[in-house]
Amino acid sequence: GGIITQTPKFLIGQEGQKLTLKCQQNFNHDTMYWYRQDSGKGLRLIYYSITENDLQKGDLSEGYDASREKKSSFSLTVTSAQKNEMAVFLCASSDNTEVFFGKGTRLTVV
Amino acid sequence: GDSVTQTEGPVTVSESESLIINCTYSATSIAYPNLFWYVRYPGEGLQLLLKVITAGQKGSSRGFEATYNKETTSFHLQKASVQESDSAVYYCALGANNNAGAKLTFGGGTRLTVRP
Image (cartoon, rainbow over the protein chains, first blue to last red):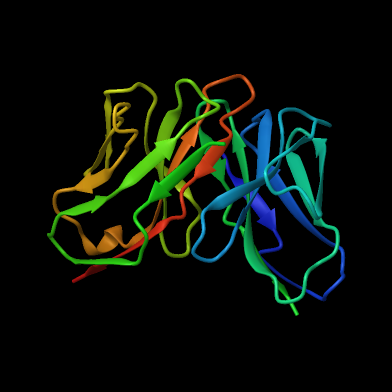
């Protein structure tokens, strides 16, 4: 089996700060995703990538950038953190039949 | 766009009671969606519980069942007798079955607490 590793697990940022979240997978999957989860709400897709150097916008891409540096890694940047923002960011990868998730990065903006 | 609506939590039941978490979907951009239930146990990552890719079929896992009903656009999750270890957050989701990957649309999640 494989694993998806997200770093950091907890991220505290300041308003206006640029913040980067990282994700690594060893499944050798082509497709990777970033989802945002707000308390009491479902997951919303921010960006996904179907291969190295590919980027596709999801429903929630505004305010974010992403980068697929190589097949195994997919990073997400919050371009300007919003005050009092709290959410969990989930990275995932898939082999076109099943999606596997990391444990998430919890973001708090003070 | 596509959407998924599920039972709003929190849901609390006693051990050995039956459970149903409702899920209905609208797949406007996908002709034949795949349907999923994901679960997040305390302290763990989101993981697949069961999936069904063909209308009319039933999926099952860990005592849970869900039937893909295209007529009612529903995919309700059921278990005849819950255990305390089933306490978790459950998400219904739909996805496309194409080469672009299994991009998913999720419901809002249902937090289940099972009392001992």
